[in-house]
Every structure is written in structure tokens, then in C-alpha cells.
Image 1 (cartoon, rainbow, N blue to C red):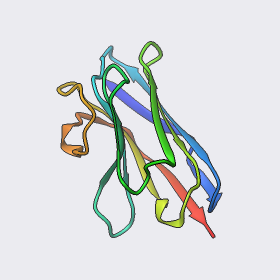
Image 2 (tube, rainbow, N blue to C red; image 1 turned 90 degrees about the vertical axis):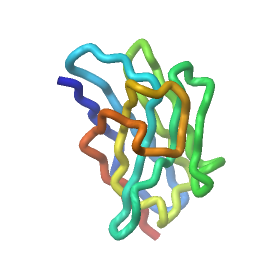
Image 3 (cartoon, one colour; image 1 turned 180 degrees about the vertical axis):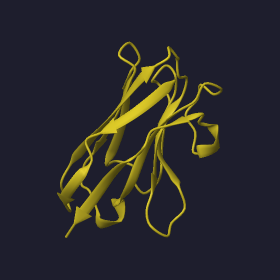
Image 4 (cartoon, one colour; image 1 turned 120 degrees about the vertical axis):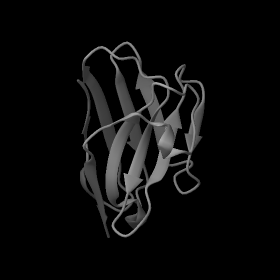
Length: 125
């Protein structure tokens, strides 16, 4: 069974930083594209950032461009999201997601086959 486990969430003041990590474990599986998807109460699920298999292609939602950076370590099967200059609107549950079908970065959450359990990020004023 494949598992994606996020860590690094928490409570931070506006303007602060957090780094989310995601570790893949379980049955050997190689994810192509991977991404971070967030969902805030009462809002639709949003792909925050996505990264291609090679790591050279990325996608960022307009709301996080210039503040968030996605990266991956394929050898360690790790995915990261560096979040800087956090805003109140960034408060949400953040999910790590992996795709076996698609290799390019994308804004579409439907491309992902596996999901983590989510980690809460709360930004306070």
C-alpha cells in the first residue's frame, strides 16, 4: 500500500515561513508529477503547486507565485513546499498528491492518483 505522509504544518504569524515535507512509503511506486493541493473551509480544493517528473517543470497558483517554492528529491521520494511571506488566506489543510499517469506539472487536481492525509497550516494576524 502506498502512503504519502505530510509534515511541517502548524501555526505561524502572517509574514512568517513554513516548510512542508511529504514522504512516500509502502509498496514501491514511482510518482511522475507531484503536487500540493490545499482546501480551506468553505472553499474549493486548489492546486497550489505542481512539479514535473524531472523537476524542471513547475506550476504555481497565482495567489502563491513568488512566495512558495515546490521541490522534490526523487531518490528519497520526498516532496517539499517552502512557504514564505505567509498570508491569512493561506490558512488551509495542505495535501501532498502524486500521479502515476501524468508527468507534467498542472493546475488540475484530477491528475493525482494518491493523496496524503493532509497537514493543517494556520496563519494568524
